[in-house]
Structures are given as structure tokens and as C-alpha cells.
Image (tube, rainbow, N blue to C red; front, side, top):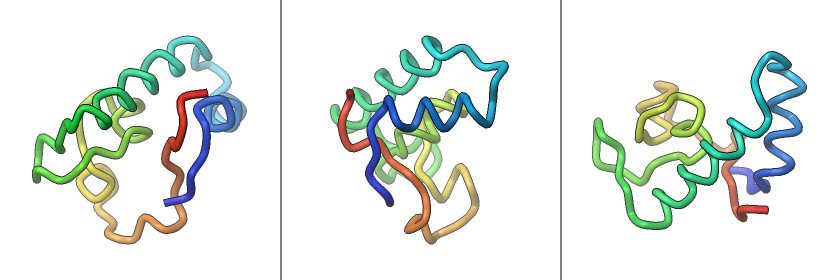
Length: 82
């Protein structure tokens, strides 16, 4: 995964999804990052959750369960809250 900050991810996400509310995305991302740091696991397979995917999808899931793909090397993950 490619490390990114919440601020950088939100800026990119809002650019591609202009109808989304910036503050809502930030809140969802912070909650997902906290859940990941607390050890929350994917509700489907038990692997570590993908914070970005969890925040956007609205359920605790790993990259593979959310996307159906195994290679996450080109996708982003939050490495710090701000």
C-alpha cells in the first residue's frame, strides 16, 4: 500500500467525488484508522482492515474482501491522522 495522510486522501477523494462532504469523509476516516489501530479485523475473513476502504464502504473489511483483488501495492492507506 502507498502511505498517505487523511488530508491528502480527502483532497483527492473530494476532487473525484465532489458531492461528498469533506467533513463527513474526515470523520469516517478517523474512525476507521482508530478501529484499525485498536485491532479491528475484517468482518468477512479476519484479516486487518483497510482503513480507507472501511471508511468509504461503511463496514470493517480488508482490501481483498472489499475489492476482490489481492495486490494492494498501487492503493492508498492512511499512515497518519493529519
